[in-house]
Length: 182
Image 1 (spheres, one colour):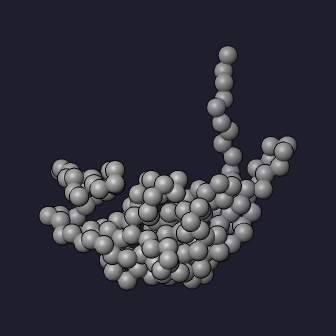
Image 2 (cartoon, rainbow, N blue to C red):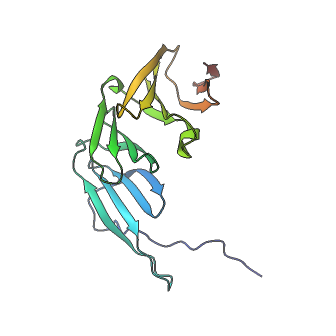
C-alpha cells in the first residue's frame, strides 16, 4: 500500500516573469519572495476547499535596490521584516514592506542571523551581521523602533555560518573550524 505524504503543486507560475527568486520566506499563509530585480513580492494563499491551490500577489515593494534581494527574515508578532540587498540590511514594516530603518553599520554585509528565541516572542530581538572578518551584534529597541549596535568583533577570517546559542553565546563557523564567542 502506498501513501503520499504531500502533493507537489506549482504555487506561483514564473514562466512569464522576468525575475528569478533569490530569497524566500514563509509566514503563515503568505510567501515572501526576494527577487533578482531587487523587488520583494508577497503572495497570499487563497486556496479553495476543493483542493485547488491559488496564490495571489498581494504586495510588491519598490523601495528596494536594483540588486538582488539576498536574504529575508519575517517576524509577524513584532510586525518586522529584515532584508539584505546590495550589502545593506534594512528593517521593514510587515506586511506593508515600508522601510523603517536602514542599518548604516551593515554596509558590506555578507549575511545575517537572528536569535531563534525571538521567533516566538520570548526575548529581545538580536541580530548578528557578518562582514569580511567582522561581526556586529545589534539589539532591537522597541521604544526607539530601531536596531542599536551593542558589540562589534574582529575575527581571524570571514565567517561562513553563525548561530546564537542560548542567551549569551554565539557559534561561528569558519572554513576549517568553529568558535564559541560571548
